Image (cartoon, rainbow, N blue to C red):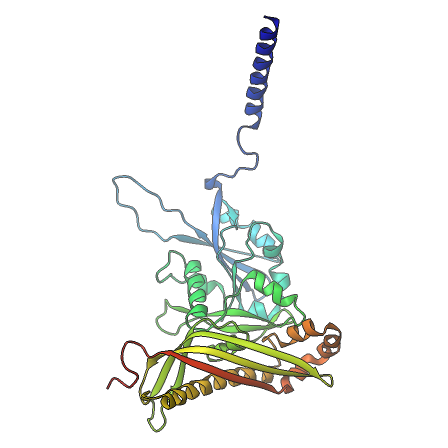
Length: 389
């Protein structure tokens, strides 16, 4: 009987203790209410005339739902403009206008204006976004032609916010058109911390017509943390090929004797192997490109035999060589080595790289580089391999 009473008392005591603990531990000590936060979708950073930071922050506007009533049409975002000596102070001023604290964990893009990118070190400007725990390292990072805030002030074409619109155009311009690269906060950091720190960032600009449209094409080339040169879109394809970063795109080749006519082929797969070695202390570099093609437009070729197929392939191999040689000429002329040659030389021979890096820009500008292309025709499409007309 005593054992039963003792066991009952012990059980009762445990229940009371658990009840007391549950009252103490109820709730989250670090909770945030949704109505206290403004979720940042995009940020535009510019430099003012007096050298201050001007920041436009695009905040997502939650849609209100009213049962039985027609919803009021309104934009899906609101823009807050702040200005101060530092990015952090500009961020702290957002609640003055918004009435909520900015939440950075869902940020899609950061756009830096061309003037700011040319005058200030990007690493120092973006330091807060690397250091703070809220922004993700996968946030897209772009340089804009002209003021960055003008990009976020545009209306989106198909997405809910301009930030999301720019993010999607950047991704698909890279994956489907090979006109830019997919660049993030992390990719800039990795490039700047590599053996040769020249870097590339996506480039965004307004279209001349229509006024609402914008494009992500071309690249911003970074040296010593600052914008040095803009690479036009027609040179980007060659760079992606050389970096073995080419996903999909279209090649063009002119028709001999037919003014204005061109044939096209879609690149289904492409792989580039870069070979680097030192010969008497001087670097030797070559690229071997292998790819698969699909015919997309025939205007002057008729592929009825193996010989015709080889002739067709040779035309597009020559197109790849023109693309890559044009890119190499552009980079060597501007002394911007963003291909990764220096980084590979460092991995192969760190001691030799210590000597090479002292005047690597000059060496790269004079470096003879060999490029070979080996293509294979996979399909001619749904009709026979000759012009349809």
